[in-house]
Image (cartoon, rainbow, N blue to C red):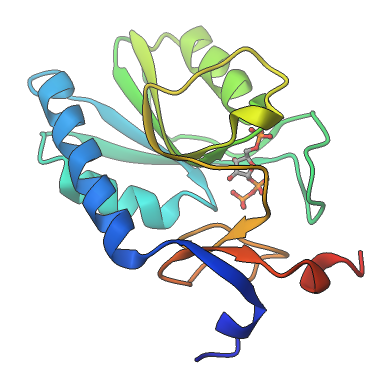
Length: 183
Ligand code: PRP
């Protein structure tokens, strides 16, 4: 057991369960995007691990981009305002985008980004999120591809952080309340 494992209350999805789900999502997206030259856009930082796995699970001719946004800081709830801190590096007009996210929570980030990409001329913007937390939604937005629908618990691992830590856990787990209750 690692030092990080000791901070985990329970494992929600094991490494094997995640891999199996990623494979299914990748195959679905292959069918939907073959011949469409999609552009996968990963939202940093949380989605970087999911992105790396999903693009290999979806063997379609495609390219990748990264965008970084900031809304949470180190707080555990979204402030609502989304700022782009690193933008994509190419013209996306006419492209079929697939935005790769680790979690769809209030919906602030993805509703902002979807509109942003459409304004920049994307032909279509699909959303693929590893985790969906519909109970927390304040914006009207749904994902096209969902890994797992999760309850309103503080989840970390496989890209998801608490104060920038735990992203490198290979599984998704619920953080023990005492780890963050000092905030
Ligand atoms: C998280 C997550 C999403 C966003 C989802 O990012 O990666 O981008 O919050 O929440 P929302 O639906 O309420 O907007 P965070 O700001 O924690 O940054 P990170 O990706 O660097 O962890």
